[in-house]
Length: 394
Image (cartoon, rainbow, N blue to C red; front, side, top):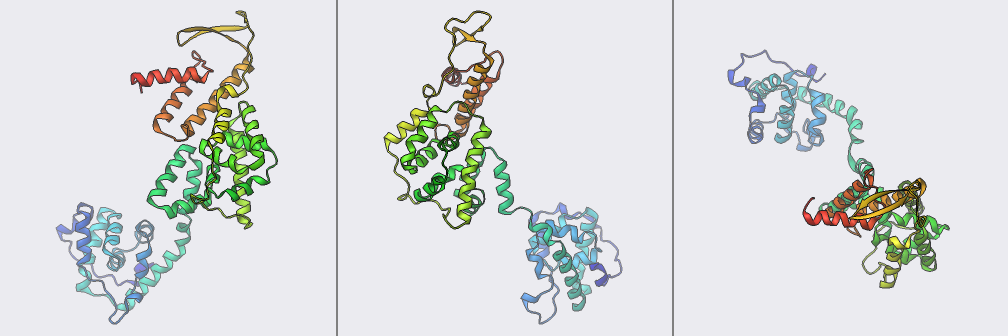
């Protein structure tokens, strides 16, 4: 115990003013109060060897549990050797009774004096306590913890957070991307590196599946680096029907894992490409890929030409009477396709994840999910939502 090393003076009669909780004082008043109390140091001791100097690197939240069980005199001695702002934070974390007692003892330190050997011994004891618990705190927070938090976020929120860090702390953003590295980050690598990553992936359908959940900008850049295989990937993309989001994410993670392995092996370097290094994407490339993403380019379920009442059910949409076949598998396929496109909208917003796009996508998803509104046509859903937005419904 630190208290064992400290000489405890007899308890003086308590000044009524000393009972006032320190928390009643402002931060500025606390800092001023501590600044006016001289720190007790051994004469001739150099600043770098001063007792308790290690506390400057200890956060108040770490220090409070270590000293709150000590005698008030030991706490007073400790706080008197800390930077004023830090000492004020620790003091206000104590109970009201302890705050008053410790504050009074700090004020009396100059008059009572403290043996330099006692100060050094108390400092050494506290240093050992801090060092014994330091490992408990080093693993809390930091880049790795932030990476795990961002991984748990949805793609839109994760990208928003990274964009904010790009502006406020570019170095931290780069460090996080190195530890996390998402599929969309592949498009920001130099073309040679991107080509190297996809070179070892023989299945063009896996590449097409990964591109299905990427932004339009990412799709265009990656397609441009695929060389002779770009046409086959676009064809596979165009023929691809509705896919589970989990399959898309698995395909993307396969590409990301491959990029990380190559980086660790020293075969590639995960750095962003300069503007001059970015692949040139022609208007023809963009049109080919966008054509593949249009609803009419996807395989459409066929319907019986004249469904009977037993085969179908009627419902109203946009003022038109329609007869939809009651084929559960076909209907589910259409709904899965719409869900995927809604998810694309939610993540991408045609390349930009705007707040308005996300709200519209959520509304489309809501219309799609209601039993009384089984909309399976994206254009119809978009028309409804556009009308609602025009009216100012949301």
